[in-house]
Image 1 (cartoon, helix red, strand yellow):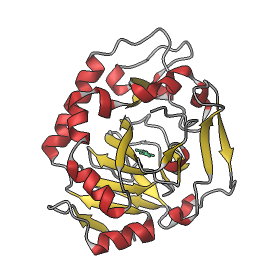
Image 2 (cartoon, protein in one colour):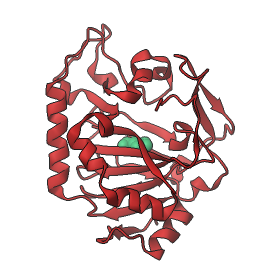
Image 3 (cartoon, protein in one colour):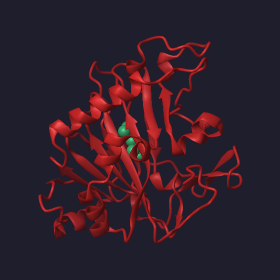
Image 4 (cartoon, rainbow, N blue to C red):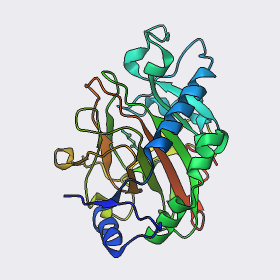
Amino acid sequence: MIPYFQAPKDGKITPDMQVAYERDGVVVLENMVSIDTCAALMAQIGKVIEGYEPPDHLTVFETHENSQANDAYFLNSSKNISFFFEDGAVDDAGNVTRPIAEALNKIGHDLHGKDPVFKEFCENPAFSAILSSLAMAQPKAVQSMYIFKQPGIGGEVLCHQDGSYMWTEPQSCMGLWFALEDATLENGCLMGLAGGQGERMPRERLRRLAPGAMETEMQVFDARDWDVATAAPLEVKAGTMIVLHGQFPHLSADNKSDKSRHAFALHFIDEACEYAPDNWLEL
Ligand SMILES: O=C(O)CCC(=O)C(=O)O
């Protein structure tokens, strides 16, 4: 069982939380964010969507394979606010088949840098204090994503390790995942393999063929499948923050329910480590 903790009011990690992080690779902190703040972030994403002009051909976010990894729209999204659609909401001609707000898979990857409301949220000193006390010398936010997990069409996210996408030497990636709505087994909560972070490095790595190249490859160092049948569900209430070790294997199922599961994810690396210049995510 992955333990759940009440978010520390003073922002200080307790010894129990530290033990859980080192053993499981994940720490669940309930009531980290107020319901008002969750609502404010959801309202702000509504405004971001209102200001969006869809192009002639939309970009679907492929959660089953890495086919989007060579797409220029995806590769350029490190430093702006980009919109990725659910497969089930775009027709063969690339046209959206439902209202935009009900068709998006995610928005990323620089909400923390480019949107004032998300920027202020992400700069909460409690977040970096928690990361520092768990593992990181100098936390630097490098990637943010608003994830919709739409009712009925919200796609599965395959088991992965975040460090595969933000490579540093030595490894340092960590994620903060915020439930903005209740996340349950029905609407596709996060799931993970406790202890799976224990290997020396991630099992695979997405890299550009050279720094700045518009082509990528997935390097596979260990081709074993993750034992996803044993993944623990992380069903959480809105306002919960889940701290993820960069090698914690995690996934989420399709959302077959009629309830959305909005979440916001913010990823950090340690500035004291060397950020690989051929990472897909350019800083
Ligand atoms: O929200 C999800 O379903 C997946 C999120 C995720 O994999 C991440 O934030 O690294």
